[in-house]
Image (cartoon, rainbow, N blue to C red):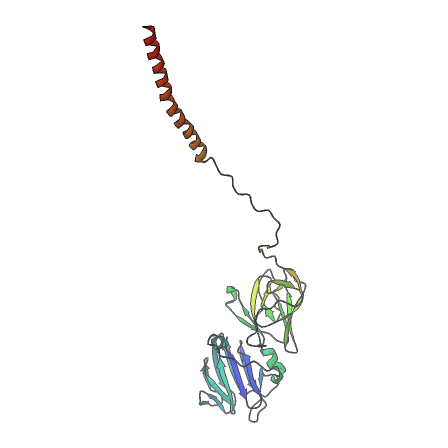
Length: 293
């Protein structure tokens, strides 16, 4: 998934995930990216997102892509590495994974510069289940998850409860609360009632698993963390190093060649004594015969 990196003089760096269906840029508070610079309209531009396919549509003046100006109403395809400008504000389309693979240090998001709408736009769930085709679900301030059509995030799976769980954002942090579902909500394989969720965690509603996309805290921190309020843990078979179970007895050797060898030794001895006995007997007969005559 790609990100929009915004550089403002004196304000540091901001990064927003480009999640479906769109990212609205403008001066209005309800925009996902709010810019307060002069010359920015309430809705100045829209980036339409479909997977990693991006399309920029200019709604105001001063919109550029790779140095090429776009008139109001014009659109242009975007790809990673492209550079944008809105009323003199520079932006880049970046791939965080490519940056980490090359050892490039990516600038962390600075939450103090994010508006409430931008804060919410940082969070999304990316489906791991093949039936959902890696679809990305953006998370609002309050997101109800379940199989009912009344939910904000509808998952048509029979093993999910009608209202399975609720996701909510408080002070930039994402939390999940299970709504007494029948089959449970799991964070990194651990069943939870309510817990904080962090970027890189695996969140599952019964067997439907999602990767959590969100703002980076530090680029070097391990992403998968243990949940805060774990209640029930799925059993995972693992070897117990302190087990007192006795080792299995070694199998007793079967009949070997040793007794046979002993028998052969005995047989070999008898074969040696038999000729000697015959010789003695023969000598006795000869002596008897000579004495007789």
